[in-house]
Length: 205
Image 1: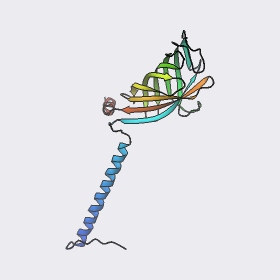
Image 2: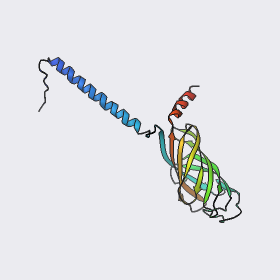
Image 3: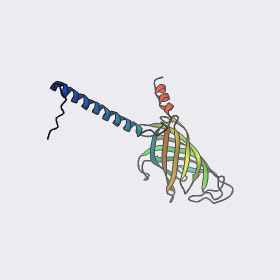
Image 4: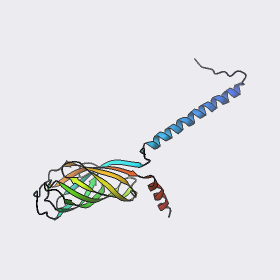
């Protein structure tokens, strides 16, 4: 059954125009709603653009990571422990999957100092150079690391496409057996509103 809307006293052409206007208004409302929903998915309630992803850091003793100074006390050097005060330096590849042969998209380089006598905790400083599909640059992190438990590290700066970035990364052990140990690094990155304006201005200078 076809429904016919009748406006008393209006000619047929006016009726057709009225229906067209109603359909146009409905279409514009639908497009406006869709655009609003799409943009909100990349921003949080504070107006920050965000990016969340995970990579895998692979560290091989005496290949990508070295003890520079052996600590004087506490736990002995082991698979997950180093003596208190040990200075360690590293330059580790970061891949898209837990398999070390998967694609390398980042490099983590930095140093750590063992800060607990059980040899499991350290203060770490690192620069992570990222070569993602549409983003290139680096972020710097600092904080406390636990060798066998998840730990959060605040992001303290960035370069390139990560200029003014904020947030944190979480490291979690995946495989601690053998000469190469693997950690999952989850990135939670946020850009404040002014970061995008600065980036656009800088590119046009």
